Length: 142
Figure 1 (cartoon, rainbow, N blue to C red):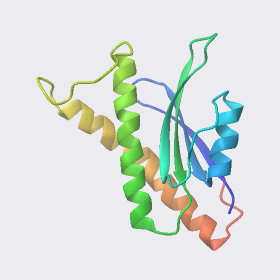
Figure 2: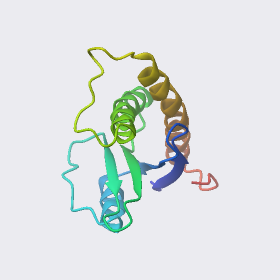
Figure 3: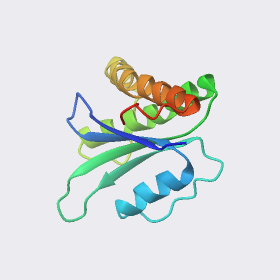
């Protein structure tokens, strides 16, 4: 299994988002390179990280999806982690609010469209590299 990484920019905020596909060791190496303490990833299908460089204040997010051959499972995990991503980006747009009230008094449509756009950026790539990894295609670019 080859690990894959792709960086996209959130079209709404311009914040970079690293999409990671691979095993837990791959995610741990990525996190360590970003200065994040070891996270307990055992049993997790994926994770979403809000990363902020302490000195520069620059922000980026990372979405990790554990490798799997089950396409339905992958789509479910991607949807779950991308929703975490959307909520994190929405918080960042709201001056790093400690929570986001999307239940009461908020129009759901901006959040839903934001989710739809980001899901469309992440899910097709995850399914593509999943197919490539299971077929042993070494020509697929990250």
